[in-house]
Amino acid sequence: MTTTPDGDNEPQVSTRKPTRRGGGDPATRGRTTIADGVVEKIAGLAARDVVGVHAMGSGLARTFGAVRDRVPGGSTRSVTRGVKAEVGEVQTAIDLEIVVDYGVSIGEVARAVRENVVAAVERMTGLEVVEVNIAVSDVKLPEEEEEEELQPPRIQ
Image (cartoon, rainbow, N blue to C red):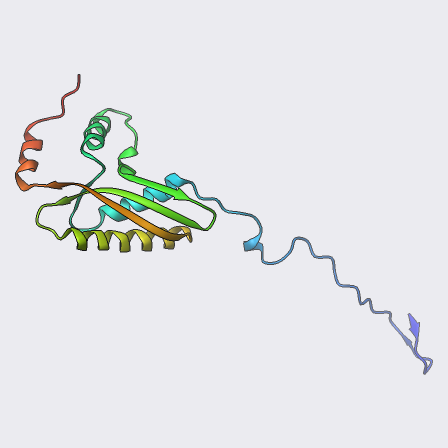
């Protein structure tokens, strides 16, 4: 209790602020890191969703991937086949290798792939996608599909 100049007794009020643990918004405490493989999976799935993209990766990578996919317990590498991402703290760059269907506009497919990949990666990770480089490694002809279905991959 303190006495005022008028002689009244008043309870003593502390002007000290209560001790606060941590600092700032709890959502900003700590750091989130995103692995390259996470961005590669997101980008690979987003690229495959575009009409006109027949497959991802080079011919050799697709052949080995098809064999690996048929082996029991094979890896899920096919999702990231043809995708390479470099992830920093706030930005990422993505390289894609695609095979397009015959008859589609490669420029339009590439534009649609970029838009889809950028939207998916930025929405899911919060990273800024600074570039999406696309290499078209092959064009899938209609008659090639029939040949592939008839000939199973050879395992030696």
